[in-house]
Length: 310
Image (cartoon, helix red, strand yellow):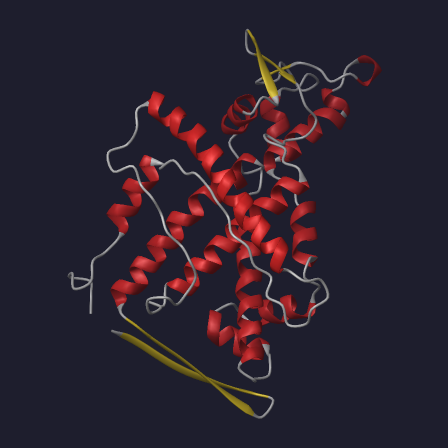
C-alpha cells in the first residue's frame, strides 16, 4: 500500500493532497496508459510529431487538469500546488499557467524534426543546388570539399544524428528515392509522411476523448444502473477473412439502423435554447485487435495479490 500526503500553502489556503493506492493498481494503471498510448504514438510518428512535442502536450494536459481540479474543489490555483499534485516543476507549471492554451502547440509546430531540417537544407543550401536552383541528386558521401553528399548535409543540419539512419527514414517515408549506384534524389521539400486534415483530426480527438471519458467514469465501479452505457460484443474464437467481411457488411447495415433510431429519438427530445442541457450522444465503432499490443499489455499487467501487490 502506498500512501502520500503533502501540503502546500497557497494564498493563505492550505491545500492537502492525499493519494492512497496499492502498488499493483498503480502498476496496472501505468500498463494501461502505455497500452492506450501506443496507437496515439503510432499516429504521432507517422506524422513527424517527435517525443519532445508529445511530452510537452502531456505536461500541458497535466497542468490543465490539475488546475481544473483545484478550481472545482474551491482552492486557489498556484504553480506550487500544481507542482505538488503532478511533480511538474513549479517554474514549468507557472509558464503554462501564464501562457495561452495554444502557446505550446504553436511552439511545437515551429520546431522542426531532424529529418525535416535535412530536407529543407537540401532544397535551399547552394551547396546542394544545381543550375537554375534545381535540387541536385547526391551521393551518400561527397567526392570532395566542393561536391558534398548526404553525410555532409546531415552533419550540417542535424548534428548528433546518424546520417545513415536519417537517410533510411527519408527513403522509407518516400521523401527520398534511391536512384542506384549510391545516388539519392529528394522527392519532397517537407517531411510529412502522412498528412491528415484538420477535420479528421478533430473527429478523431473527440471520439477518443469521449470514449475515455465514459470509461473513466465507469472505472469507479458504479452500481448497477449507474455510470454510463458501455458494452462490447466479442467474437470469442475470431472470424475467417470471409466471415469478417460479412460481419463488416452486417454491422454497417444494422448499426446504421440503430443509429438512425437514436438520432430520431434525440431530434424529437432535443430543444434548442433550453438552459442547463447536457450535451450527449452515442458512438458505434468496430475494432480489430492488435495482437502484438495485446500480448505486451497482458505481460505488463499484474494481478491483485501477486508479489508486487499490497
